[in-house]
Amino acid sequence: MTEQPAVLVEVRDGVQIITINRPEAKNALNGAVARGIAAAVDELDANDELRVAVLTGAGGTFSSGMDLKAFLTGDVPLVEGRGFAGIAQAPPRKPLIAAVEGWAVAGGFELLLACDLVVASEEARFGVPEVKRALVAGGGAALELPRRLPRAIAMELLLTGDPISAARAAELGLVNRLTPAGGALDGALALAATIAANGPLAVRISKEIAVGASDWTTAEGWEQQSRIVAPVFVSEDASEGARAFAEKRPPVWKGR
Image (cartoon, rainbow, N blue to C red; front, side):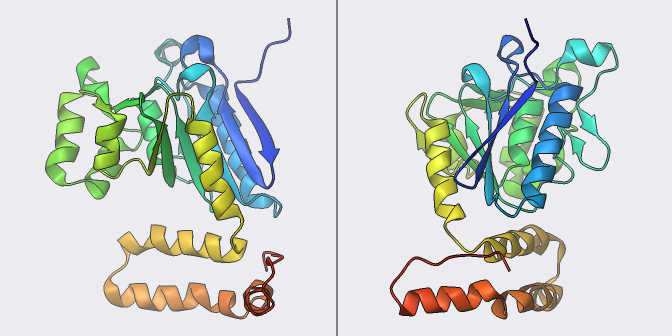
């Protein structure tokens, strides 16, 4: 029997779907998964036909975290230049949506934090239980959670290691949309289709500004935004958007 790849990639209408394909291991993250995700997002950013990506897991689980058995053999889910899980330190320039069923814990939760938006099943569960094993959530959670949540909430998640429900994650702003069980991928694809219908250059630049804003002072932010946005307003897509609106027709984007 031919061994299945650790990561599956398909394309639907300009949306790239990346699936962690280790259901027998609850989609635990090893080197092959990290390299597969990194290769997929490299293609996402390089291919003008791709507008947005959805990241999910096979078999009803997003990811149970780092594969500790593989870790003991020296197989770690790190990619040079991109970091943990192939994207934690260097996410793609284009939007990435997590579609979560089941558990997204430990490194799986940190993988989710590297995504821009999250669609989750109402039965999904989230958490960073590393401290329960005398480990530290060093794949991004200890850095990202205090930036994205009130400090006390981030501390509770990091220091207790206890999981939270999808509903609680949505209340905290970690999840954009909830779906019935089994509906996370369809929900993520619907969200992806909405994004993919927009001007691709404008979408990419909007993400660039939003990501960079937290590192800029107010003055720097206006200066950086002006520099980054300038090419958008003189782009072919900007002209096409205005023409399509005036002519009451769908726009035809070129990404330039």
